[in-house]
Length: 431
Ligand code: 5AD
Ligand code: SF4
Image (cartoon, rainbow, N blue to C red; front, side, top):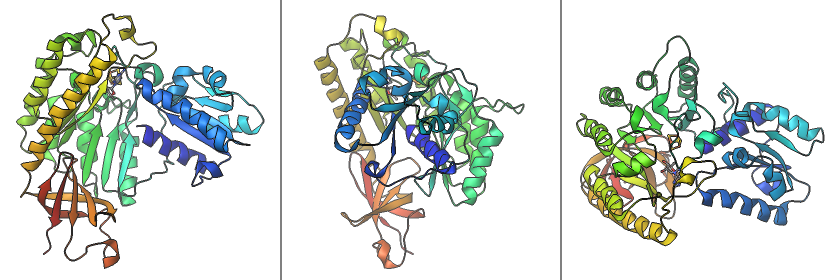
């Protein structure tokens, strides 16, 4: 989401006549897009701001964008006095005006209001990847998970109209993009604000039907709003990738309740069963938080058992981090840092063994890889499967891009010959 926000910010400013430079050293204005989902991400911003100023800061202007900007607001000017602009994502529509104020000599410009019905719906996104395009369909979040800062930094939910989303998809298809990734804090609660009133499953279906689009992905999903129609849509159209990222956070219903996640372990498992009953094999991935306040050894054990029961293809795992404004701050019974670390290591080791086994089961099969590039160091093409696995491969006729064929952006059938915990390797099938 942040990567794509940056693409939209750059595109908007370029359309206003600014130009983007290769390195921050060359820039007159340096914008930092920031994340405050965990404390570590936030600390990094201030560290970078200080360091960059020391080394290259002379005569430059600095802006802080994103969730740290929204959360810390004008306090950023105190902590990093060389910063001139602080703006959260709900104010990006106003960035051009804010830059005019900076140019007029104003040294403290802010965009911090969350009171907006608008989405940052710009026709000018400057996309970095020529084959895969991100599209935001919904911004903000109306849930209130007890640990999460997002509702405070990105504001309430706002969906784009289906017409605006589909127009963008059609344009991208005409430009040669074949893969679309639909983005939102919670894509499942998408609701078309126009009279058509489409829900997420309907939008997904229609995006998958656009001529030229071969792969559609979406992230991220909330289990509470994840309906069976989404699986039906995936079943019906092979252009909808057979991968679902469904963050569970914990395998213990007691912890889920304290997290205010709005579902139990059993309700989550029902969604997993829909996926396992689908016609195509759907790859399932998740997010886990360990060490949420009050998480006992028995709760943690339930998370480990859940990993085995679902048999995830991959997961992101985090130690619980206390965030400003969040309801979980009021909970006692904090889990000590070293205990969080111990649980995280155990969890990651278990998941690694699951992935080694699951990936090795694919050796001998043929997968379609979308080619992302070429790795000179290993002499392999870099590919990705519909299930979102990395599949690096060699090609007997065109071993590299200098061989008369650059496969970047193409779809190639590959026989899997080796498997590791995080990727597959194979050989392209040459006719
Ligand atoms: N501490 C740790 N992990 C968090 N996440 C969100 N907030 C926190 C927090 N306070 C994780 C969740 C979410 C992912 C994007 O980040 O697992 O799904
Ligand atoms: Fe945060 Fe929960 Fe909203 Fe996801 S659904 S952004 S975890 S509050």
